[in-house]
Length: 149
Image 1 (cartoon, rainbow, N blue to C red):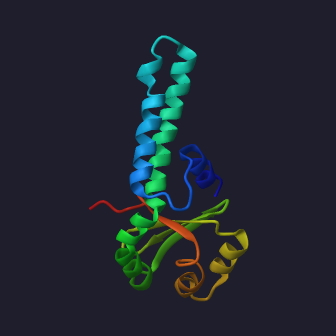
Image 2 (cartoon, rainbow, N blue to C red):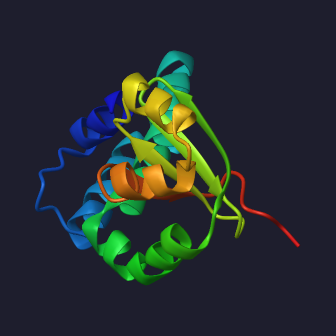
């Protein structure tokens, strides 16, 4: 959740920001912090390089959790979370990463350690996750862990 809040603060995002506004903000930030603007000063150039990478990462992340993106991918998500089993999962901080048997991987944000322990100890982990995690937490499809044929 810390990462989400940091990115939202960087882009000055409010709950009703759409993808078009996000893209405009992204372009303005990239123009402002593009490393080519700071060629002469080494310290500012290094900061601009770091900041531009952060802006790019933040943009891709915010697009992946945007309501429009989630709505466009909802059918695929529902098929995965209802028909595919869980192949693997891990938890770090408040991030739960679940890899499904169809090869897709989703990240769930804000999952507490207590909820993770309940998932680990559940008799039927897929059923537990379907009832308590899949539609209860903010999620995004992760490119990590996708199978390449």
